[in-house]
Image (tube, rainbow, N blue to C red; front, side, top):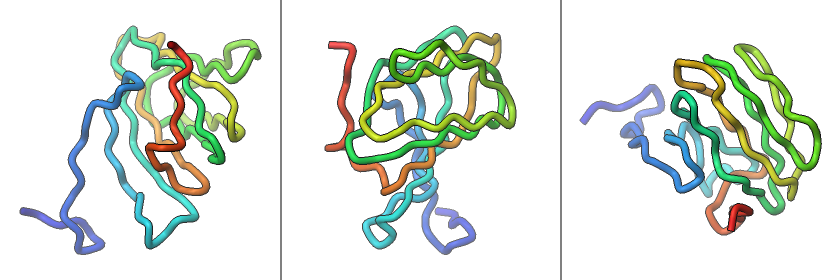
Length: 122
C-alpha cells in the first residue's frame, strides 16, 4: 500500500448518497476545525438537495462547470476558480451542466460528520 505525503494510507473514493463521488483529503477527529474532500459530479447530473447542520461549507471548483443552488436564491453559475459559500443549515445542491465531470473541493468548518447531513429531497 502506498502512502501520501503525510505518511497516511490514501483514502478510498466512494459514492455518496448525495449523488457524487467523494475522496476525503482531510477529515479527522484530531483536527475538528476543518475537513476537505474532493467531490466529482458526473456530466449531466445534479446532487440531491441537502443541508449541513452546524457546518459552513465552501465549494472550490477545480474543473468543469455547472450551477450551484443555495437556499431559495437564483442558481449561481460556477466554473474553474469559482468559490461558493454555503452557510450552515442552508439547503444546497450542485448541477453539472457540462459534458465533463464537475470536480471541486468541499471545505467544511467545523469538519463534516455524517450525523450533520440532512437529505432535503424526501
